[in-house]
Structures are given as structure tokens and as C-alpha cells.
Image 1 (cartoon, rainbow, N blue to C red):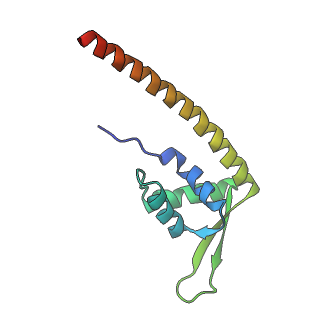
Image 2: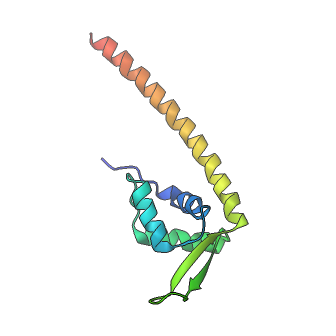
Image 3: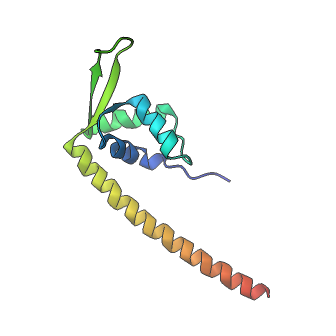
Length: 118
């Protein structure tokens, strides 16, 4: 059986994490892995989402060369990003209501089925 993925909401979590402050891509990948243990998107999916968010104007990026070693690309949420984050919040709330309805109905069906088996 296939597992549900949060792929649709990877951008929402990226924006949520960027609302805490700018960070670079690998930090976002690690945070997603640590804070969403049931969803481990691969780094390519995260970087694709970042690219799309940047094209949409929801995030901006800049290169930091001040530290020794390779340059790091940092990402920052924009005002448009905060608007998109609010959209994701509403979308998730609606989906949650539908999922809660499903769980309630499923519980009723299971109870009915158990009663019929007796």
C-alpha cells in the first residue's frame, strides 16, 4: 500500500521554517527530516520547491562568501511568501476538517460493523 506524502506541502513547511529567519538549503533539508519524521523529502525535492518559490517571488536568495569554504546560498521569505504561507494555512485547515470528517465516519462504520458481527 502506498504511503501519503507531504510533497504537496513541502513549500508550506519551507516557508514556515524561513519565517523563523533566513537559512540555507541544507538546513531546510535537515529540519524537514528532523521535525517531520514521517516525511523525509529528498534534497532534490526541497531545492525544486525553493526554486519554484523563488520564481514566484515568495523567497529571495543570496550567496554568502564571507565564511571559509564553499559559498552558501541563503534563502529568505518575502512579503509574498508570507501571503502564500497564509494561503497554505487555510488550505491545510480545510484538508484537516475533511480528514477529521473521514476519521469520524470511519469510526462510526467500524462501530456499526462490530455491532453487526456480534
